[in-house]
Image 1 (tube, rainbow, N blue to C red):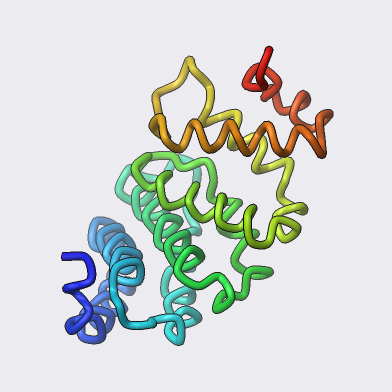
Image 2: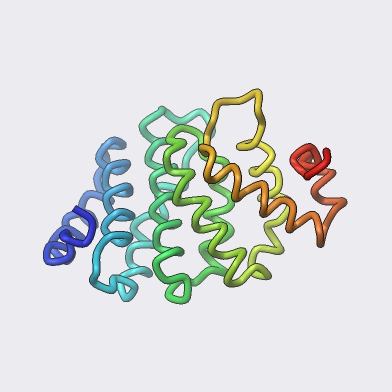
Length: 191
């Protein structure tokens, strides 16, 4: 529906808030996914709702490593939703509070399709406010190495892979030792 969802944004948002409080992990997963898509596609500026949305999504990030697939899916979808909020209006986000949780949720475990919005958000932040990601650089480089690993499943697709390799090259210009330490040197031109 893309922008055609706009007239229904407010009632849907209320429904999604209720669903984000549900005990069923599938409902939580779908609610997180739907919330992110609503924010991404609505022509209505939902950024005044971001703090409330972040509070509703926060419990989805508290997941044990060996959680059931539905719970891991909900966490990945929550990361995708937060990523969509970041891209939509990062200035409306308390990034100092959001980034430790968001970056801590990476790499995604179950729903690799959510890597698309996650990496769009990371690319957006690197372009618009790169210094805010400096405290997370080691973790992010490990995530980059994980998703770029050719022996694992394709988690990001060709377009994101290409943009990510460009980012690795750019980071290498500033921090070559960190790129090598993360095992990302193989993705540099001439490697």
